[in-house]
Each structure stands twice: as structure tokens, then as C-alpha cells.
Image (cartoon, rainbow, N blue to C red):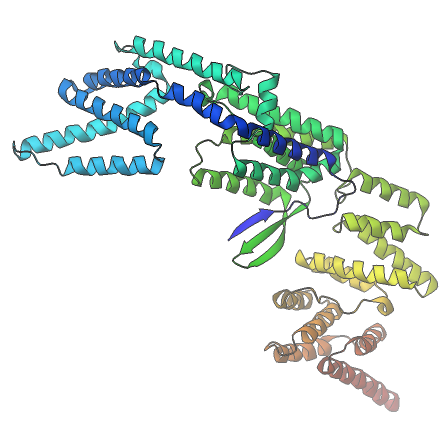
Length: 544
């Protein structure tokens, strides 16, 4: 199973021209740099194939081994084995997994080595070999972390001279190809870094991130501010990584990843109170799920980083991703506070249209409300306005137009379903109670699952919302007539009707339910309830 984020999953007011242009720039730049790959590889291979520097490392290791064990014969053998392994690794370009396997085999062979001098010598020799192999690995780590740890060794000066020569050669290559490194931070190298990519998978991942998150950030901020957030936040993230990472002394960084993560940070800040959509794919099945941005977006960020770590991607600059995300989040937070819009609105254009509606009055504003919902189907502010306007219109005229009826029914059902997803029974009951019965949409709760309908029945009974209980039961029996829960539900329904107070308003609700329902079993129970009411009324009249 894997998942793909699909952003907010809403339509856009304007075409995301800046996001598309950035994507095209990345693709064009990647296509042009394909021709430089062989030339770069040749230049770097010349530097890496310099055996004098590898010998200097071997000599440094030899001095380190002597200092630790004081056994020149063994240390010389280990130095030769170490140097040969380094040489073969670069020549054969073996993977990290193969090298680890080779080291494990070497340890195993040392463990079972036969020694003619007896068990005691064999044990000592094996212990020395084990310690030595461990020191080889520790030597590599210490040398990589800080080579000044070995400055007291006699071979260190030669190692340092050759290291500096190697570094100057690498710096020259980086400057030739405008690579962003610690020694080559300038406008060209930064611009090259944020539009270049290492391979097709790197390019595809960044383009996906831009399209999924960038288009909504652009729609919310506008072209200029979005482009500035992309450049400023991403560039700050990538430069901070170069300044703080030791790997950038010799290595270089490229790719729009820091800028893409900056865009994700902007998205997180702008749409913190909204929901994002995720596409979950399991074999041949897929499912779209809405998740809150404020909680699940950080989880998505962490999962994506762990996925990169698990894939043994040594060249991934995780620090640049984190810095970019933080700077992007800060940029988005500052911008959103200066350009506030109500929580349920996604875009500035959407909010402007809404303010015009409120100024013009409720004459032809329902059409404009419908247009707003096309771009933000989760806007509760607009939905509540539609429901309120239509209900008021019905109370005033005792009827509504056919166009209003279609919009009202769709909005009412969607609002009910969204509230029930949150298990907000109180608001659902309030909405149903204020809705005039003749315009109550049929059917309600049809988009909910069997389990969700049963939860509604139980909760509404607990809260004594009996009319809503009966509506939920009707929906359940209509949708799942062969379910094993229908018989127990009919018994519960009789109990609810028995508790239901026989008053004039309740009788009107029962008469409405009788005509409203299309399920014969449900209608029969409602009819019996009404007949029982009239029988009691008749007996009461005779007694008088």
C-alpha cells in the first residue's frame, strides 16, 4: 500500500502559471544538463582516481594503528587490506550493501581462522583482528567527522597537503559547473542548484510536490508573493544547509527540494485549519480520504523523510528539506496574518465574491454562492447562508423556486453528511428542526455507511432527538433492507414511538414521515402510531 497527496482537492480560480513555469524551468534545465553528465563524471573520476591521497590515508591509518596497538606487522597488513579495499570499491563501484557483506565475511573468516601455534595464540590473534577491524571502521568515522583528531600523527602533514590539493581540484570543478558548495556560494550557483536535479526520480518527486501543493499556495497568495516565497524560503533553506553541513566542504548540492519543501511549509501555514486529500492505493483499489492539515501534514512530512532514509539515499539533503519547510512556514505565517480571511475561505477571490454577495442582498446571490461552492465545497459559511436564505424565503412565501430547491437540497444533504462525519449530532438535529418539513430533502443520510447510520440512531436516542432517530432509521431500512439489524431496529422504533409524546406538533411530524418514507415496514409502524393517536382521541371524546 502507498499514498499520494493530492492537495486540497478543490478547483482553482485562476490557472497556476507560476507553478507551471517553475516546473518547465526544472525540466528544461535538467534536459540541458544531460549533456554535461559524462564531462562531469570524467572530471570527478580524475580526482577520485588519485592514488597518492589514498596512500596518505593508508599512512595515517598505519600511524593510528601503531598508536593503538603497537604492532607494526599487523598494522601494515591491515593498512594494505584497507587500501586495497578502498581502491577496489572505487574501481568496481560496489554498493554499500556489498561492502558491508564483504566486511561481515572478513570478520567471519578471522573468527574461524586456524592457528598452528595453539588455542591461546589463536585467541589472542583473533581478538587483535577483531579490535583492528573495529578500529578501521572507527577510523573512517573519525576521519570523516574531524580529521584534526589525527593532527599529532607524523603522517598528518602529508595527508593535509594532499587533502588541500584534492579540495582545490574539486573546487575548480564546482566553479566550472556552477555547483553550490561552501566555497562557491554566488548567484549563479544558487540559481543552478534550485533548478537542477540529480536524476529523473529526483525531478519527478519535486514536480509532484510543486503541482500538489504549489498550485494552491499560488491561488491563495497570488503570483508575485508565491514566487517570492518559493525563491526566498527555499534559497535560505539551501544556503543554511550548505553553511552548516560538513559534507558541503567537498560535495555540492542541487535540486529544487528545499524550495519544494518551502512551498509545503507555506501550504501548511496558509491552510492550517483546512483539510487535505490523500489518495490511498492498495493493489488495484484506491480510496480518497480527507485529513486535517494541522495534524496529518506533519505526519506526511516525517513519513516522506523516513521513506527517503529507508531507501538508502545517501545523496539526500534532509537538513535542506527541514530548513526549507521551516522558512516556508514562517513566510506563510507572516503573510497570512497580514492578509487575513475568515477560516472557511480558501482564496482571496472567493472572499471578495462573498463580500459582494452580502452587499447586494439576497435577490440573485444564491447563484453566486453556488459558484463559490464550485471552488470550495467545504465552505460552511456560504452553505449556512444558502440554507438560512432559502428557509427564510419559504417562511415568507410558503414556497421556493425550483432552482433554489435543487441548490437547497444539495447543500442541506452535504452539510448533514459533513456534520455527521464529525459526529456532531446536536448541530444536525438543530438543522433538521429548523427546516420546514415540506422542503426537507429526501433521502437524508444516504451517503453514510451502515456503521455511521447505526451510530446516529444510538446517539440521537441518547439525546432524545426522536424525529432525527426516525429519519436515520428510515434511511437505514431504505439503504440496507436485508440487514440483520432491521428486526432489532423495528423493535427499537416501536419503543421510540411509545416514548414519543403524542402532541399536535409530533403528530404533524408523523404524518410527514408517513408520506416521506418509501419503506413499507417503516410506513406501517408510523401509520399504526397515527391510528393509535386518533383512537385515543376518539375514546377521549366519547368519555366526555
